[in-house]
Image (cartoon, rainbow, N blue to C red; front, side, top):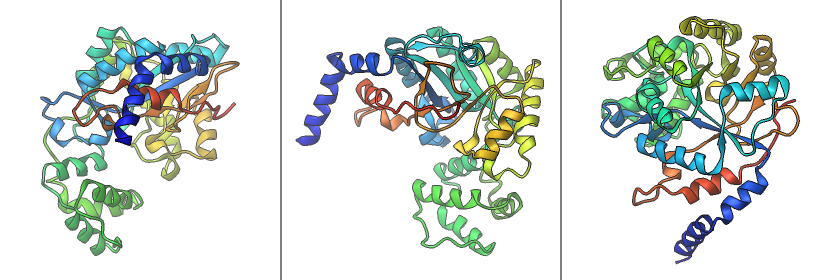
Length: 342
């Protein structure tokens, strides 16, 4: 009963307008940056194998966009860049929509919904993944697991044979697989390739996953600015060649777009340190986006380093499959407001 009562209170706070009033007062001079990844319909052939933690059903994206329209002033990447470069004021309760990685479904499903809502966005593309069918090894493993082609015990055996046993052994579940993926991420690229070699065929679902150059240009023409998400998607703090991940990636994405090198980037896996920050600025980026779950103050000059708020589908949909704007409001409206850098 207490859980039911708490749920009723959440609904009442939102429907009464009290949550909205709280937001209008508390977050008036804050920039909220939303972080999405994949957008798919349940009819899309990529739906059964996608990572549920990083995928939003397309109809729910529409509901989110309507929520943003009601409670925020959605701004473009150019407006945020102008706020940083020359202090051009952003509107109250500004919100920027971003997408990470460069998935083909962003073009197929997110772009038409953004156009219908007349909302701009910013997509960060991994330079080496443009025009590539297969996604990153993490997503390929999750797809193979969800399709029943790869199991956790087999991966554990391969890790042990290569001299990297995991103890205790994680369960043969999606959460267990994420523990295995974390162990694989810690390996050198050559070691990881060796461990995963026996699973190469199972990890190829034969479906194109990543955005093409033509699609990237259509996104840019359709109001979705393009930024950089590294060259290879490796965490910047583990990069063997940081210049390649930053400067070279910026050049490649600009060439793919047939334009100047993009002035914005986001850090793969959210990883950065002081060295990465300094090299980011040296590479010519005007704005860098993190996965720090904060809103950004916009009184005075906007910081060049910006936090973002991401959320999973399970966090905005109840057990009956209904979109819960009150849950989304309670999460977004109460996020801390913090400047990450000067």
